[in-house]
Structures are given as C-alpha cells and as structure tokens.
Amino acid sequence: MAPPALSPSIPPSPWEPAGRRAQQREVKRNAVLQTAAQLFNERGFHATSLDDIAERLNVSKPTLYYYVESKDQILLECVKTALDLMQAGIGEVRAAGGSAIDQLKACMRIYSGVVTQDFGMCVIRIGEDPLPDPLKKELRRLKAGIDGQFRRLIEDGVAEGSLAPCDPKMAAFMLAGALSWIGRWYRPDGELTPDQIADQGIDLLLNGVLHRPVAARRKPAAAKAKR
Image 1 (cartoon, helix red, strand yellow):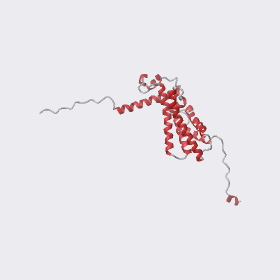
Image 2 (cartoon, one colour):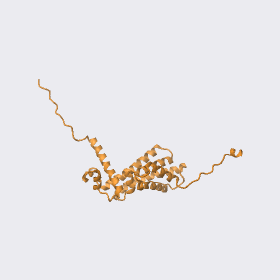
Image 3 (cartoon, one colour):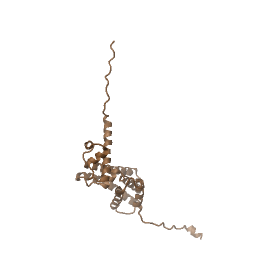
Image 4 (cartoon, helix red, strand yellow):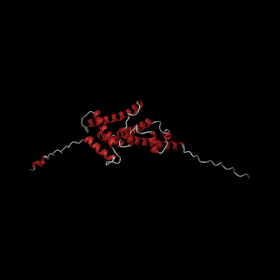
C-alpha cells in the first residue's frame, strides 16, 4: 500500500497582512508629522529641514518620502490636524446641547487644550504664511468654520442673557486671539498644567480682572421691624 502523500510545507510569509501594513504606515506617518511639528515649534519652519526631521527619527531622508511629499505638505498636515481636532471637539459640544454659556466654556476649553499640543502650537507659532496660496485657502476655510461657531455661541449667549450685549464678531476675535496666544508662551515644563491654564484663562476672559465688591445685602423688612 502506497504511503499517503504529504502536504508540501508552506513557509510563512515574511510580510505582514495588508491591513497590518497600512496600520503601521499610518503610525509611522503620524510620527513623522509629530516630530516635524515639534521641530517647527522649536526652530521655526524655515530653519528646519527634512534632514533634521529624519535625523530625529533615526531614518534616512529618502525614507520620509514614503510618508510625505514635501515640507510644505508636512506643515499643511500639522496645521490641518490641529484645526480638525478643534472642529471635531466643538462639533461634539454643540451636538450634546446645553446652555450657550456652558457650550462656549466647553469650546474655549477645547481650543485652549489643542493649542498646548504640538500640532496646535504649530498653528500659532508657524501658521499658514510659509505655505503657497492654494494651500492657505484650505486652512482659512477651516479657521472660518471655527470662528463661525464661536460667533454663533456668543450670539446665543447674548440672546439667553448669560452674556452682555456685544458685537459677536469682535468678541469671537478677542476670545480666540487670547486663547491662541497660549500656544506662544505655553511650556510643557511650566508651572501650570493645560487644564489649569484653561480654567484660569476662561475665568479671566469671561469675568475680567476688575475688582467688583460684593453689594451690601439688604436686610429683610421683618428683621428691621424687630429693631
């Protein structure tokens, strides 16, 4: 009787499945963007080269081109990532509902939080100026959407009586401008955490710095009658 035929041994593939490879590529691409944002914030856009980014990542410069096309594209993606985070966070707040003032505070907290991150600081410290005009338009569209959300929240706050009557456009510019500046002076090793900065910043922007003495309380009429 002839022995049974043996199945040929199939060696395992040295390549990861396609889905796994795509996931690894995305992780590495994000690392390129994160590292680039850190260097842009530290040195400035023009003073940072692709060689600098590759060196910090311990890879060769040609390796970067597998994940990004150019330094301009890296900056665009860094800034766009931050603006997308803001837009998504504000969208979640708006969808959850609540009073206009509570929504405004929550959106201010999101804005403040993003500008203390690498990508958010890149928006403030580098901005769109180094980019060619076609790429600037896309970023300006995203910024306009965020500004529009703040204006509508301020309008709603005035309507519900939680905010004093004001020019919503001017108020939105002032609030966003003050929150943006956090990205200029924030340091991860500073005395305040991002949450503490957000708490104090929101309180100062909405309540001001003027001292308002507590008004003398009027005594009830019944209490006066006993004297």
